[in-house]
Length: 489
Image: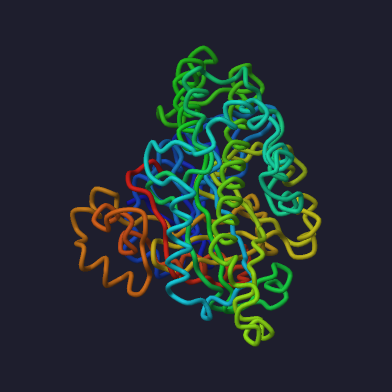
């Protein structure tokens, strides 16, 4: 195990050595440090710290675990002029992200039969699992170039969603600079999966607000205890995966021409200002917009499912309705945040390209990049737990600049998928799930997603909350999870 030196509460250093140009920092609560066995992930942080142009330090979030090149839960800031861009440091599933919806319904007053009908309707509307194609392929083919360059605003203009949705999506649902010309034919061919969730750790989850930690924040986010919520976790699917593959190969070859020291193939990189670097950023932006559109279309298909299941509610049991029990649902977007992305941001007065891999932007109150509706609070950051455990809504704290305005994106694995399948049996999974329903496939196929394969989400979230890198707003507990079979995460 690499020697971790304590810097301060919940913060540990990997000092500079060898080729490292900056140190690495890892954020872990003491309980997570005990039994911490991520030697390969720490080596990946050190490798990233060896790249030319890296700024200040490499950050490892409390959900850190081994990835491809940069570890999952890794944050790397590069000088925008003299630094590098790395496809592997963004990740395979570009703009894998999480969207939180609120419904205005009291979860505890919804009949179980109606909840089951709703889950069936969602499954019918939204394909799940590896390789599944969209139900909207004709529209995608007709407008593909506009969707990947203009993002959610274009989709809303087609009638998929509402204009107010844009106020609650990172970048307003459109990352600038996307280009169709930067894509390979194979990537374009794989761009037919809008409104699909894939497999692995991707999901749609129906839950409820279990606890409010900060009433001011929860009020600003319009979250109330007991309210039924929907979490959507998916990304750019095969489209983004192909882009990462294409440019990882290209960068590996080009880095030699640029005479760069690259410690591992997974961190293949090129200068940000090079043609290859600019081409990648244009292709990445296309995948970012694709993923935002994916979650937007899923949102609209979920809205349709709610309308279909609750449409007969009106006019029935008027006395109950006057007490606001089971009203017609109004599905609103709380926020949509990306992980697996590289973004140009001003930090410490410098222009940086911040790579967040399995990490999410967490802006504090007053930061100019907050959307107007969340300027006074900082935008919501949605941190899902593992299948069957709690998720959190937080925002950036006063010290979030220390992590380049970044937070963890989830709980983080403790067991690889293969190890989980070998060591966890179906009865153990059922026991840990308790009353939480799992839909979308045979439970045996989700052993690698069992809660036992992940870190304790409470400890992971508290790591940053205790030192004011984040502030907790609310906790969400699951009622039912829709997942797809296979592993594309």
